[in-house]
Length: 252
Image (tube, rainbow, N blue to C red; front, side):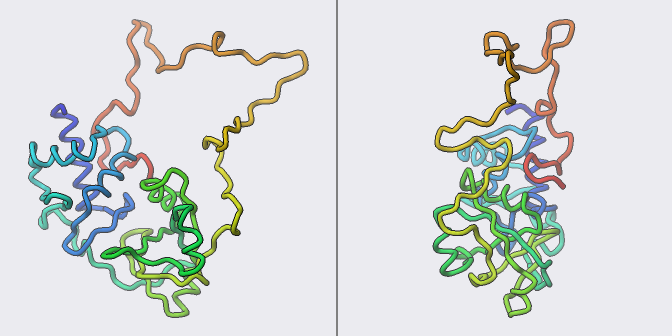
């Protein structure tokens, strides 16, 4: 990893772990600690950064020893002097009427029966934005189901929500009557641009009578535009470290 890439990665990690973890959909444990595995998953969604493996990220900590961070075998955090005040504390707060969370398709039946329950030592993470919830869910499964939580009514019924940063809330549990899921047996609608399942081909542009659709032998080869001198034009993903708070999945 070159020096410029290393500095860009350290700068982004400090933003994720110490300054605004909620902007990246991350929720710290007490003391401001994060799972290295979870941080690695979030990093893979970031634009304009190196994409290390999990082991490569651990080696980055061990070899380059960034001064703003400290780590163990499986956890990492910003050093206390680099943490925003109150990091890791979640005061009770009134939620908006609707919050959203992402669920693995295989867990839908359990959620219908038992509601949302926090994993051991963690929280149920809820977002005010559907796309943020979907982005967080994609760190574990390719096509998560985004469920709506009627948070305003749940809070009125006694469910306790806590603020985990701008637009992010956590809870220990949410009973099933406040969680809206697609009906059993119904597949969630795919978003435009997502790859269809079961080998189905995406709907293309309708052909006009007497017209034809050019094949790959006619179309130009994909690639970045070239300059007149023949060299490739640098794209935005090749520029390192321009904005430490820009996320490839979550927009601030």
